[in-house]
Length: 142
Image 1 (tube, one colour):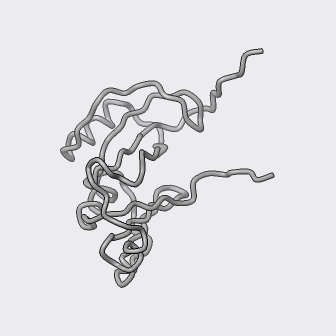
Image 2 (cartoon, rainbow, N blue to C red):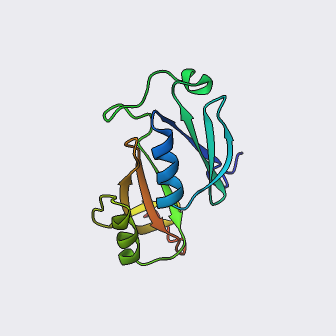
Image 3 (cartoon, one colour):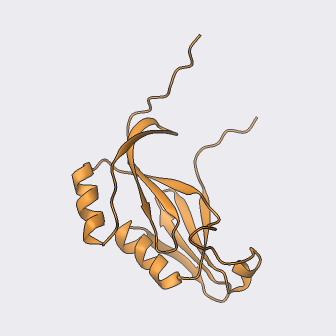
């Protein structure tokens, strides 16, 4: 039997590397861990995981087909767990970076129920942001 410990990395295909790096580093606080421009790969540290940005017109990106579009992204969404911070602080931070902010909604994820918000990166990928919390899973009935 396999036991998943967490997300190792995700790969996002992009035609907007500069904007994507700026978004993930300046807005979300990721750090560039490794860049291989000859392959079109930039890896960003996101806690214990990596977010790989792959340029679609470079060797790695060409293996994955066409560029993502507003209606044809190659990912529905991914969720990032944030250290505890108030919803007001999250909203203020995102607004300061001109990120459209909707309402926080209770959703179920790996840590159970929690309040989260969806935002979009420059390439149109959807990111769910939620704060760490005590695990509170749903208990099956019966």
